[in-house]
Length: 301
Image (cartoon, rainbow, N blue to C red; front, side, top):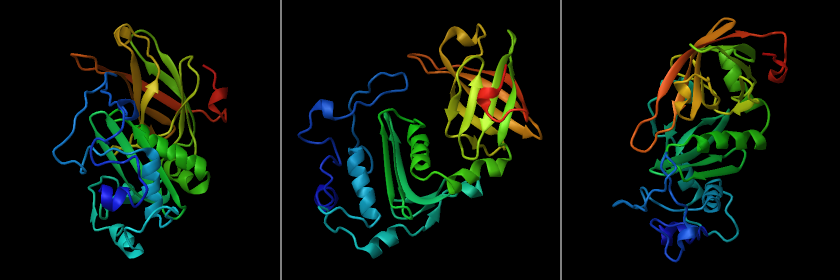
């Protein structure tokens, strides 16, 4: 890999194993879900996993596969080789035909927010990564995190695409498919009082949420599950019941569209703690369409 790929492409901060000559503070520490660092580990199949790279190096790799090599990069593949690697040869199982993923040689080929893309994600203990390439727009995006099973790489990639390519294509998929665009207002019902909630569904996958007296927050990975429910995950917010407030928690909301009503459940999710699992407490939530206001900031509780 060093001789055939990294050196010719000028990827000087990449290695199939722990980089030699790098000090410890140049290598990101991997962290467990409880926030504690994970001791260094490796594999017996280096290269298929446990490779090291920088975001800058991965973008250089992406630009090469865009057939836009940098001036200091040498040829390692012909254009026809690259085309062949990107030719789909198999499909990943999917319950949603609109989110079909095809596989070439080493690359996953699919649409992201209305744009053709190819790329690959990675993840293991203390690692979650994503390299995404948009061939028609000439864009390569690399997102690396040192915490495993994290939603940031996918969500941040979508945000970057939204900034670089604002407008029609990536905005049409979510709201047009679901018919949810607009303002929704209601409550989370608990045994110790109700908590007001408002949602604003725009024309992209962004959903604005206001819970109680909290400020408005944006969710960039709003999605429709295979069961037809709107799913909003990792929301900041509290239901303020004694049992839920024992530990810090986030909220997960799932809502079923029923005409001008959305209802379902809001679940408190505590983070796993050392020596024990986190907890999940569900509460009924119901929202009605509010046609009297045009922005969530104008909703009054």
